[in-house]
Image (cartoon, rainbow, N blue to C red):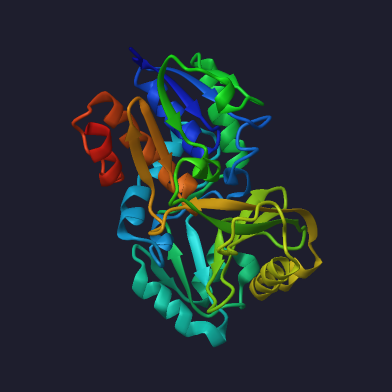
Length: 339
């Protein structure tokens, strides 16, 4: 009979590490297995923007994403260093002012800024935009630094890590949590891949203090400061299961949008390019599925760092109380598990 206090988490991306953190905090003996050489190296978490921006995500995401994501800032700030609580600035080119209006109608908890207000927040954007939306309660972090910090914290709490090891080569004695992301498509038939491409630029000619989102009818962009003149650019979203290959079109679209925010980005050094596949279910909402002593947590789509804490808390509560029904529990799978 399996020991419910012993849990093996498969996958050291953001979902797996958040699950391991919450379970260890609740007194479980936890070990983590990952086929990569380190945390997040074989997960889309490595290429994430790290924005903790539930209200901005409400532009296109379900209400559940906005609601569940509001716990993320405090969760991360309590466990990893350097969560930046400076909000999110959303802008649009003058010709796309209707897009900014549309964005405002689909979101909430923002302040409308004029030219002076924009310049006060981001002096290097002075005179470039006449109107912006400022989401003051949002935050951001460096995903790679955050994952590394979680691993260090877990190791200090006695959690064992087994990197460069496949799940099939390990035989856990207790409960199993599958947090493999897109790699779990071998057992989650309805999981699909949504490819995202990213750039990291380095510039000494512009300074931004917070994430800046450019709304555009075809090529939206976010620019996230990473410190020491480095900026992460992202937002491409392609229905594809192709991993790793960065396309010329994706890079051109990102650079053109960055130039629209500030021409200084045209002279920036390209430090890194990357691409990976976000795991998503048909409705782009996460799922918790249970079968026997195994749990699968997946489908965080583009909301990994935003939703992983809430999903991990619901997973831990489900393990502690089998009668608990979290909203992300898949009904069909729960019925199969109890049949």
